[in-house]
Length: 177
Image 1 (cartoon, rainbow, N blue to C red):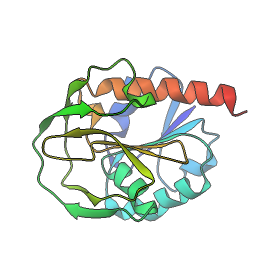
Image 2 (image 1 turned 120 degrees about the horizontal axis):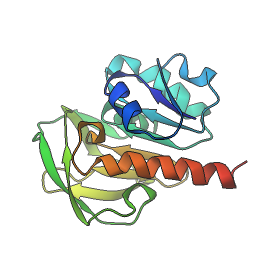
Image 3 (image 1 turned 135 degrees about the vertical axis):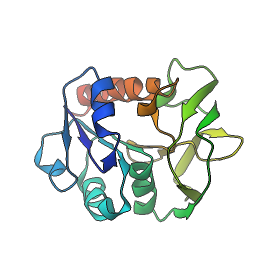
């Protein structure tokens, strides 16, 4: 089961896109479930401590979307700053990653965030960028943690990210029992 951590924005939409069993839970309740993976939704920065606790204790894949991704970055001391973004962005895939399988090298993504990374530590691989923003998709080097700085639940081609994460969680379960 994939636990969608409801940080205040997009959790129900994410749940509707997933084909596998999933549950939407508040951040303080998420660790109580037996999760095969976590999706940290976009939302309120006040939920950061509960999300950091999930990351600290997680031994399964985690996908952070919007603020959820910023929480992953914060766990590794990435620098977060207020930023202005367009509502849609053309994203360019630079490196292969489980999240970008079967996607075109350039794809359109929707954004709803007002914050982003001004820098990230070297343990983050930059998977995809846009002209306006270098860190659209990141993958942490040692853990199965992924950061998406746009909002795939808002549609466009970014939805494939959710399907690919779902597949990654299934494969992860097979090899990490």
